[in-house]
Every structure is written in C-alpha cells, then in structure tokens.
Image (cartoon, rainbow, N blue to C red):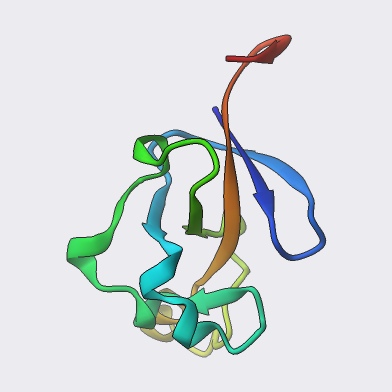
Length: 99
C-alpha cells in the first residue's frame, strides 16, 4: 500500500499501488481551490500507477470511493466526473509500519 496525505482535511490514507494517479503540476489549473479534479480533466497518457511517484510528489489520485462523483445521473457521467483528490506521496506502507 502507498501512504498519501490528502490535501482535503490533511488525512493520511493508504491506496493500492495500482491506483491511477497523475502529477499535480499539470492539473492544478483545473482544481479551482477545491483540492480535487474530475476524471474528465485527466488525459489518459498522463495516468500512471500511484506507486511510480516518489516520496514528496504532489499528485491527483483517483478517489477510493465509488460515490465520489459530481454527476451520478448515469454511468458515463459518473465515470467522467469521478473525483481525483490532490495528495502528497508519503511513501510505501507495509503491515506494522512504513517501508
């Protein structure tokens, strides 16, 4: 698991290493101070597994909650408006501590 500090509320959470993420610098302009962006803003070629980002990297990571969407009116709208939260990578996590 990968430890992240979400910018929304400064919570420390764990995400699976394969969770989709993108480097934040390219996407901050879509954020508008909300500390998150919609999937529609993310370019497919920029998506990488969260595990490839170094400790301290600023990223947007796909929400772990399937209900974190801006428009749940239909399946496609929900997919395109799924929230990707701004976060800082803290490092890898293993049972009983950090790696």
